[in-house]
Image (tube, rainbow, N blue to C red; front, side, top):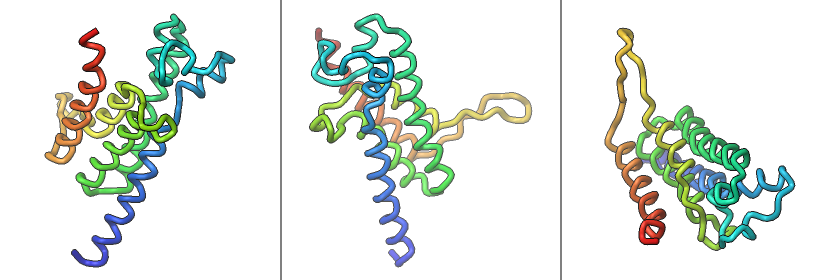
Length: 165
């Protein structure tokens, strides 16, 4: 590994930290506060999850939060995709933003389910293209596919306790 590669992976490590911190921003709590509602943790749950807004039949807050969570995942990966060309590095950053949603430090790593963020990250990682003859093309590679597999396994793991209830 030459000096340039070492520097590149140092930058990728710093970007992973930024992506993790971006993923841990409590969007539901912010949206809930903007609408003048009480703190999300007081809505029958130990964490601030958008499912709380769905439980209390507040579809507007749920919709805004879901879209913002998905956009957060998409924006981070899309922005990094325009900076970093290495698929493995981009995949690590994508997983980092998702892990920030699942295990935020502000909640002592007991976070949310992350379905909307996962959706945004996956759409940004594996975009669908239309060819010249209007056929749908899915452009993929191994590092991106592995990152999507990791994200899907983490989502299923987050929802496993709900399946037993």
